[in-house]
Length: 265
Image (cartoon, rainbow, N blue to C red; front, top):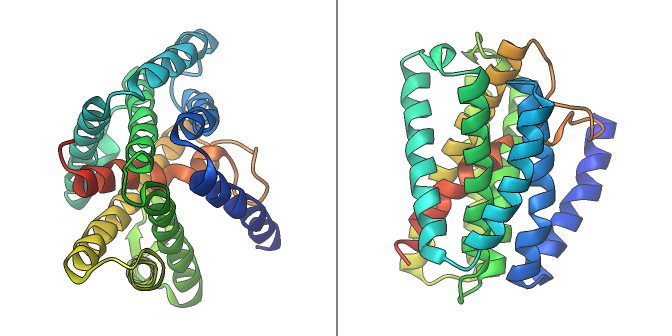
């Protein structure tokens, strides 16, 4: 727990500072680092092919650099990814998550999901009205959902949420995570972003839907790790595991929020 907290205290201010103060062009390039690290871990969870990684990583970089100047393309990528996460939600509700594709299909879906998360953050960041602040706030909402879910689940969690995929997640933790996300979204809107009333309530709805998506992303990663027979996606981050273990919720939440917040550019 201590190691986990120390890592978070080091990483969170760095991420917030880069998101708030870097110009979008440089921000989009810096974002490629966790994306490429995430691809390496996704490769480890699925095809375990150095050749696939050697081909796909440069392709990801080239595609991302080219896409950064086309907001409509970024929004379209987020829309398609949102459809994928909606499918995952339905599969989860119908207890069919275990039947989702693995191996090559799993690696390709990971490539796209990571690209979509990158696209969503870049799209939010480049918006003329508080773009960097909104991108930062979305990350904070997802972090709050994850943190509150962990604390509530650890403290009072009893009823298992999806024991076949993630035995430590509970219904109480899910409720606590969504409550924490809602409280964080409300506080950020009221006291930092200072949205007008209509925008405030739309922000709240979009933030809560993003929090729900983050849970689906977390469970999807749990499924990949279970199929691969691994506890963590990697060991780069002390107390957290790998990069994917830290950003699994963000991967799903950001494209969903970006589609709702930006609309068709």
